[in-house]
Length: 62
Image (cartoon, rainbow, N blue to C red):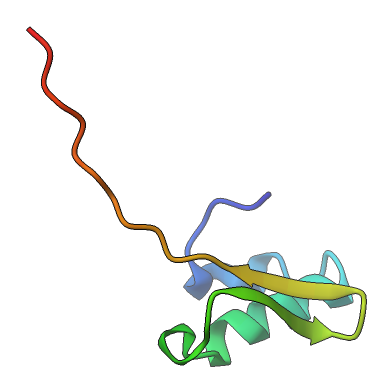
């Protein structure tokens, strides 16, 4: 798992051709237009799962 900004993707793109495809997908996709669920990026080898969550406030405890 990589924890970084998409702007720094060039650092990681040489790890694997699939990593490069994944970053390209992240950069080029407007996720606001997609429905929740599984989206194929590269046949059966690479996919994205989109899940929209609604945050909820936890009650304060004394």
